[in-house]
Amino acid sequence: MIRRSRLILALIAVAMVLATAAGAWLLGEPGGAAGPELVVEDARARRVLLRRLVAPRERFTLSYLHSVSQTRVSGVFEVGAGGDLVVRETSFGTFGPGLPELQPGDQYEIRDGLIRQFGLNQRLPELSLFVHPYTEHRLEVGGRTLDLSGTLPGGTLVRIAVEATR
Image (cartoon, rainbow, N blue to C red):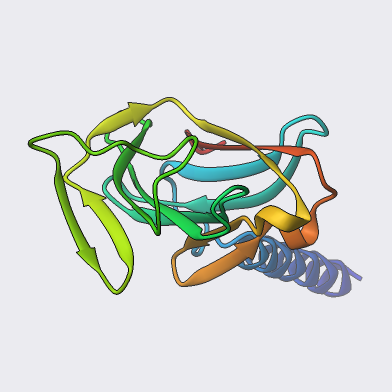
């Protein structure tokens, strides 16, 4: 009888380890390690869309279709050492509302029809944005793409931030 109960406890322990590892894999976390996490959530519903372990200086890209110019805009962000987000570069096809206005001394290049402004160092505590089907918002991090506009209802407020591991 003791042998049977030990076997059952061992099976339960193995099942718990496998469930934890599967949950970490689904959320994009490597094997349960500790560290800061990039958290993407439906801000109003407080529903986590992505939770992924990140390292300081790790980069991700957020892109969307500009509503006026109808061109793709993308921003490259970096995880700051203090848990903030650092804007590193932005690329866009033409000038328009909400897009950067280049100033003398700004670092940029124009290639293949895109203006790429780089050498940026703007720090943000978090990003918040509204997604709609026509904005085609996409988040690319760690080789994976999360289609925010394709998976969320129009008008959803999305929050992107770095948080300490829970």
